[in-house]
Length: 90
Image 1 (cartoon, rainbow, N blue to C red):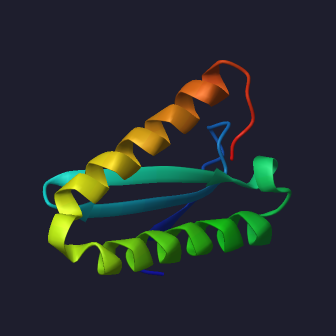
Image 2 (image 1 turned 180 degrees about the vertical axis):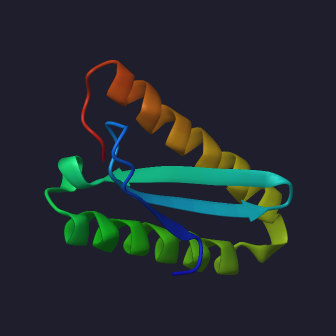
Image 3 (image 1 turned 90 degrees about the vertical axis):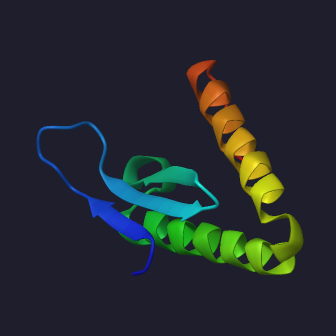
């Protein structure tokens, strides 16, 4: 699957999918854990849906793609800060 990688290493706590998209010198990376979504199939479904939403948004914002990438990076970073503080993902 384009822009989606499976992580199933035995020596790590994380098992799931990683979405990574690079445009305009920026990289958006987001992880979808099997544990968080309940199964490998459910986390894969969420990863694919996220990737497709990002591609659709990128398509509709071609004129200001660098700004879109910066906004999405900030949104992903906010999700990580919320997780570290004990809040749930959106």
